[in-house]
Amino acid sequence: MADDIEVVEEGGVKIARLKGDARLPVEEMLKKVGIPPAFADRSFENFTTNSKYPSLFQAKKTVQEYAMLYPAVEGGLLLMGPTGVGKTHLAVALCKELLKKGADCLFVDFRDSLKEYTSFPNQDRREDYLFYLAGVEVLIWDDFASRPVSEWEEDFVYRLIDRRYREGKATVLTTAHTEGSGTSLENIIGARLRSRLYEMCKEVQIEAPDYRSKVRRLSYRAGGKFEKERED
Ligand SMILES: Nc1ncnc2c1ncn2[C@@H]1O[C@H](COP(=O)(O)OP(=O)(O)OP(=O)(O)O)[C@@H](O)[C@H]1O
Ligand SMILES: [Mg+2]
Image (tube, rainbow, N blue to C red; front, side, top):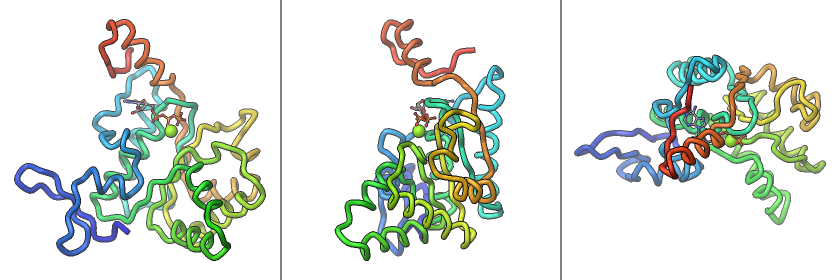
């Protein structure tokens, strides 16, 4: 997919190159890679941290370092934390940095991937989809395990993760499940898969308030003026 991508500045405009002379504006490129349009401008630069939430600072540092060191990294990342703490934001920021390095990345929402997989009319097409996701250099699977899976969806998730595990491919997952909670990851995906993730991914736990509610509160206080700074 994104084998030959490079982002270059031409006449002050950022251009992402895709194979030969084909050129795509950056927004098109991000869409092609699967980044949700609403997150197209998310980056490490606009991810704010503050001293009240050390895990937030640490998470940003870990993900940013991963991006800097890639491909000299081992395995992937598992970003864990409750809703609204910035997991998807960090995953998008990482994806964009890896694309700049020419990595073949794909950003996929967990529910969308299950929907797509189950929408194919026959087993061959479903297998093609699985092999496609399995073959990508870096798979960013957002909102992982965000809904219970049926038996054959579980088989898809298991085989995809297992294949990537065996091939030593980088997989980056975000999940709102936290360890020890009633619906831990293990409850949803089972012990075998959870065990592989321990080995495949460095865990990054985030404990912070829901940024969305902060934005709403600040926006309310500012008389409706949209304000996006995390308050101390
Ligand atoms: N530290 C931050 N700095 C700037 N914006 C942030 C930060 N944290 C979150 N946001 C913004 O808040 C919104 C929610 O963040 P995001 O979608 O990344 O949360 P999430 O952890 O993925 O939540 P969910 O589990 O519900 O998917 C996004 O618009 C994101 O850009
Ligand atoms: Mg998210």
